[in-house]
Length: 112
Image (cartoon, rainbow, N blue to C red; front, side, top):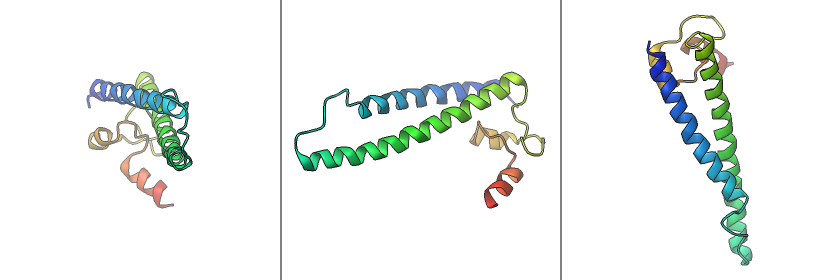
């Protein structure tokens, strides 16, 4: 398996997510300007903030997963299931490069 290719994908994913999270933070801090004076428009903006906050949270969770995967590559543990210590298949790592469980263990964990 080509771990270097997966590492590069993870680094690119991290860079993309960091850009997105930074843009979301700017939007939430209203760096482009304060809330509009119109009450209805404020309501829409505040609803958008809820969506942005959810996207920010999801991005930060994904950054944590990516960081963990990069650390696992560095430590020589990448591609080994955390649960059963079997190899995680190359197709699974290609689809989910930050996977820490083989497909069997992942299915077992998600069905519980």
